[in-house]
Image (tube, rainbow, N blue to C red):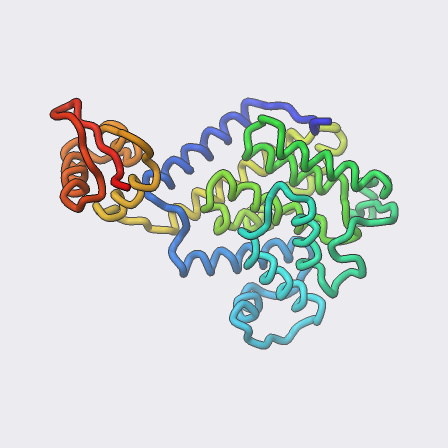
Length: 319
């Protein structure tokens, strides 16, 4: 069964803003940030996701552990960070539509922390927030079937991919498939799903935005539980994604894009015959004169061939 949620005006607006920012990434040829920012954002991601779960280590400790430097702190907290570093290092290798890979990721994140790392729970659980039980998870006998249905949903439903990633995150929190590590797995796997939409999401620290709005994060989870729909959680997550993506773009300082970068991007994106107008669609903001110079240089470099003349000229990559 398709998980229940509604498309609201807020969801449409936020999705539009995210796609605009992704379009900006494309026009700036920003596939991933520079190495310094990739490292900084990975540290923010790991620190924030674990801090949400009560890990006491400071961001400086996470940075040190990433460099294999010894730190002093609770053994459990150190192991959580070491496991998270291993899991995020392998993030791109996991198949986002494979439940087996989902279980493998949990086994890495929770290795040495729980007895059944990488296995669905076999007990009934309730979720405490403060002194109160906020959510009673579905019975353990239903977990495997519910998770299979969830993976079928993300594989086959024609819903918007970014929205599906939010739905998946919420449903993992709702189903609570593991005895521990559900929150970090929901966030981890949402990032993996978002990477299918755009590879830059591997280095966008959405978890930091969630941590900075942790009370609202839990509030929207509770509201969604009470309503039986993940709508308000989707709204929250889209806003977190948008803020995090915009901040990453601003911190990337892509600067001026030269001919070499434009040419490389065009040769990757264009298939078959194309004209100057199609070249300019890839590099929005460049003038017709710049596009003509680029194409002339590509011809001179022997990277493309041409057919026709004047406005009817067509180009194609040389094979």
